[in-house]
Image (cartoon, rainbow, N blue to C red):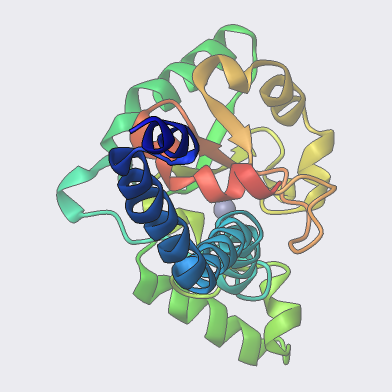
Amino acid sequence: MEQNKDLNQFDIPLAKRIYLNNSKSILLKKLLLFSPFLFLLFSIFALRLIRNIGIGSFGDLNLQAQVNEDLRILGHLPYAEIPKEKLVFIEPNIKVHIDMRDSLLKMRDEAKKDGIYLVFLSGYRSINLQNEIFYSLKSFRNQDAAERARVSAPPGYSEHSTGFAIDIGDATQRETDFEAEFENTDAFKWLIKNAAKFHFKLSFTKDNKYIDYEPWHWRYEGSIEALKVFESSNRKS
Ligand SMILES: [Zn+2]
């Protein structure tokens, strides 16, 4: 008995042995066995994450740039035709978008109070009419499409089809109608000083790289609908 007691001191209790042999080592073995799979899974996950980040930032930017470039034709952005029910007459032969009528007429009245006589030359133009203007005059003037596009928008690409564009002249200097010389008139000088009060903006300024300077051509940006229509143009210029 004395001897057994002594031997027992060196023995490991049964429960302890079971614990060591079974749980810990099995767990370790399992981990070792599955480690290549775990590593593989982690690698796939990491790769996918890197790819997604790449597509998310650079991919979108590239796509955006492509869309912006592709939208223009000979430097002109596309514009949809305004529904007929939103058009109103401001002159016997000129219609504009109903949203800008009041502001436009108010601008003419205020100019008159300052001794300036604005005359409206052209407002809404249908895509069909723009088609004729673009191609007939292109042919008549023997111009190629790019040359023509510097002075006139291709059909479907004119701000005039939105009803938010207006060509303005000086009633006392009609020889400057649709001419760059319009910029020397009192009407133009008044517009440059005051048009923003009525939410009008010069569309084709001297620094426009695609389209020739058009001091007579103004667009309305006084409503959310109008701002949405010209959003691309304002973003690019
Ligand atoms: Zn115009």
